[in-house]
Length: 180
Figure 1 (cartoon, rainbow, N blue to C red):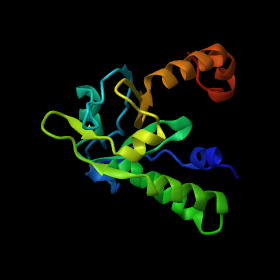
Figure 2: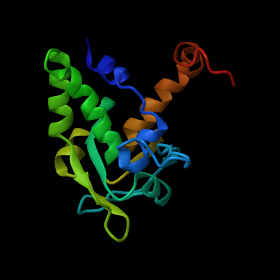
Figure 3: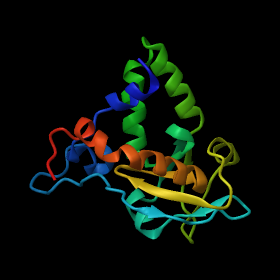
C-alpha cells in the first residue's frame, strides 16, 4: 500500500463528529456542527520572522487551534485540530501491521506542530516546514475542503498549470456519482 492510498483510505467523519469539539454526539434536537469547508486561493506573504498572516476567512474556519504538517507534493497542510486528530487516529489504526502506514505516520507526525494565531492572525511557519515546502516570501494558501495548504507560489502555479490540462478528463474517475 503506498502513501497516497493510506491518505485516501481515511474516512470523512460524520457531521456529528465535529459537534462537541470532535467528540461526536451533538446535543439532542440540535443540528450537529458541520466540518469546515475551506475554499479559495489567497496570496499572503511570509515575513522576515517566518510569520504568515492567515486570510481572515480561513482563520475563522480553522478555529483557534490548528496544526501544520508536511503535506503531499511539497506543500504544508494546515488543519483544524479535530481534523488532524481524526487523520492521525485513522492512520494509527493500521500502522502497527502496515509498514507503509508506519512510515507515513512517522513522517507526518514528526513534522507536525500546533499553532495558535497571534492577535494579528499570524502563525509562525517553522523553518523545517518552510524548508520542506521551499517557502520564501511569496506563497499561496488554498482551501481544500477540510484543510488549507500552503504552497511556494511558483510551485503552485506550475502544479495548477499541469493539472488544469487533465482537469476535465479526470472528473469522471474522481466524481463518478456527482452530477453538475
